[in-house]
Image 1: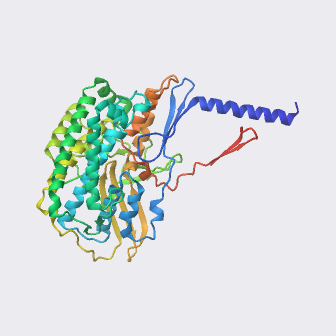
Image 2: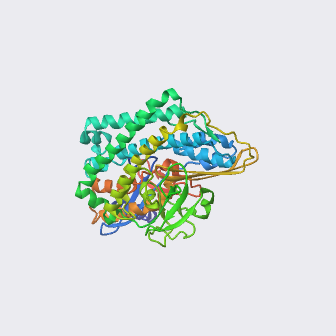
Image 3: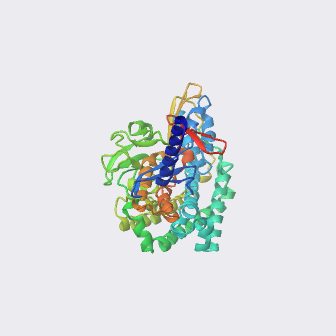
Length: 507
């Protein structure tokens, strides 16, 4: 055999062997399922078949912070609600509040109550989506159930057709209420700087009061389902409290003047892994406390506490990694503002201790928040001001900088706009809810993979349990991917006439 042919043969054999060994040691879950947006998990095994590393990657990119530049700031409640079809109301409301701050206008009291009412309605129906359709199948149907059953149809089969009908009917009625005020449910046109575009007509009030009562019944019904199916199952409780799904990090959430969680307004409170308050600040000072880290293998940014700094993917009191969303909001607060939610909160901490570090406990905390949202809806719909026609105060100040915050279902959401004197955007920064959890999610996926996969033994049920590590956070990667410094994962493969890969170029 001639020398060039021998070299080519050896090179080809080496590439084929490397590809075989690489494929044997690598497990890819792509796409991951039952979340908003896209993502994948790459798991690398060592020679013993144990997990060496696991990466939770977000391979999509959106550029709202860039292509909204040059647009009038008033467009942002409509533009940013297009970031996501699942949580448009959260972006719409954060953008609206940023415009209040930009134009230094304080909306009248009825307008604030209408905003909070529609927002709690959104939180309730969005949490119900996750409890019954996205995350719930892992517990209601079972984490080891066939993949074909781990979905809403499996939930209906397990919980019963009447339960399924009630879930669908209640979510439809809640979304119709959002559409009544917001014009449409997916991309509402409700919030304006200084107020809202529409109020509640007095003749329509009784039907919405009935809806709010039914919503509270539905939330309490959901809490009882969770108790019956999850808390009475010892195996599920053992799974929730297992070390595979536990991280001791800081926690962040919006709180009111009594340190109760508030989805619409308040100060941002941060507690340590021991539950001690380490920061409490208005959103306008968020840059003093929140910073972003970038990794070359993902488009998502990794938020951390600036005063502590980025110490890598590690937990503990010396790490700046923190968490947001339901579990974090309960940890970052001292009590609930409504009676039924407070009773549920006491049961939660009496069972799991304080603070709760178990990632899967997000599901229980989410149900407690459904109860709070429904109770708050009832308070607001029965407020004498809720049918007032004083729903807007016109802005008069010259715009400069505006920052708004809400608690999205998936955590603390911050919109930061800067404009020229005409109100045209010159800078946009979004700290999206899922970004706050991205570092902890990456750790959760890796820890679950290392705990569950041993000796190269992998099956569908185990991989689903690895996915459960991120699914508990209810992430929305469609919202969270804003990392321009990331690298495009371009792979060019050159094939011969038989379709065999002869060369691969990566960038």
